Image (cartoon, rainbow over all chains, first blue to last red; front, side, top):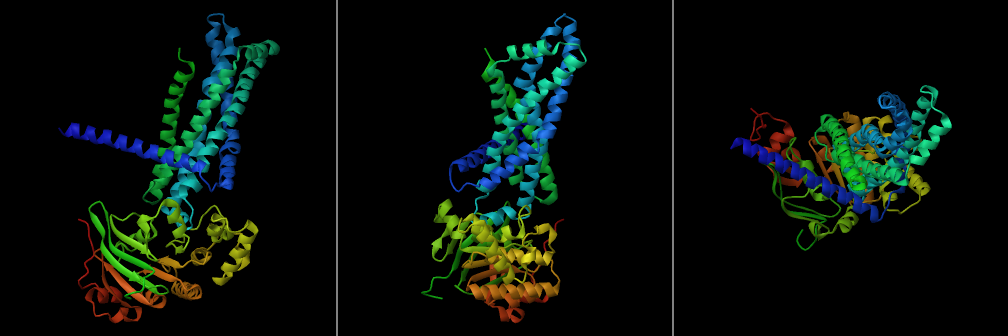
Length: 257
Length: 258
């Protein structure tokens, strides 16, 4: 009986969390369409998420492309299929690794920062202060971040796609002896618009999820420094899990036959 | 007070957090232009009372009326408009870390799109002067200021939009006695200059007597005494007397957890 009660409490907690998160997301989205709009907050978030994440995303992409070239060469050599490396790299990077790895890196960098900043504002009464100054905290803090992240991550992923493919190209031509022209021709001829578009669409969803989890956990943090720390950890973990889960759902939507 | 609508009117205000009944039916009238100091021990619900009045916490039951308008009947935007009549100095100033001092002070003006950024900066410097701070700190960030200066900036932010009602949450907590007296003096000057109605919560008795025209004591979730602030030290109420004189023995027993 006690086990059933515990299970019931767990299910109710999950349902309650999902409901609160959905209401929070809807409230944040609804403020995107109702004035006043805080352009400066949006621009600041766009720079913070997009521009300042560029180095870490670029490094992740270039090394991913390089490792992918080495690993796929080793594997494909067993079947004398080394020529498919260019195709494999461009598909892997644009469809999967670009958006997923960029999403995870941004979740670690930006999601944590959002949760810490908003969480600190919560526990130091700054969010209450906003309300007393005729400013809706959801409109001022949450809505601009949701929009900025959903726009910035696809831009980051577009750059990551190019850099990732470049990483593979460098290893393939400089180390594995591929002809540069043939490699590039293979890459371009095999790539379809949908490969890139699906990756960018995934990135927009991942960006939204990262900002949503950062804002949600920060906004609801309680209990001083420890609460802010917990919110930060929860933001990164939940955003990472959601990115992987939504990656599957979106892949099903785009490519399932 | 019969016939005159009080600026703030509370009836049956109730709030509980879990099993703990923090407010248990608060009835309180605050006339326009007067300053009320609410005293009470730590955890007695003073901050909850202010947050309920401001609408930052939703009470379980009861009515909060500001200038005759019941706050719970207002929609989101109307409530934001009503809050534009209110200024608040938070316990730890609650300045926005990411904004310089002048933007903190002018935040309300900018949020209401009443002024350009240049005008807002000029207005902020003017208000900073009213709380004894120079233009040289306008570009600094809150983390670069001392506790006393942060309180002054918080006060400047609270009065910048010339509100009808001012709230002060523990305005002198964490300050040395001289700085505490300075902040109290600034509060009294600002309230008089603006003709505002003020509510301050504190457990600093010297501050309570300096700021308040009237005083009320919150204990057990209820207002157990109210009267002139000058009567605080000789109220004749055993709860108030024990609290104001800081006696260990008396009807107030400190809550302990076993």
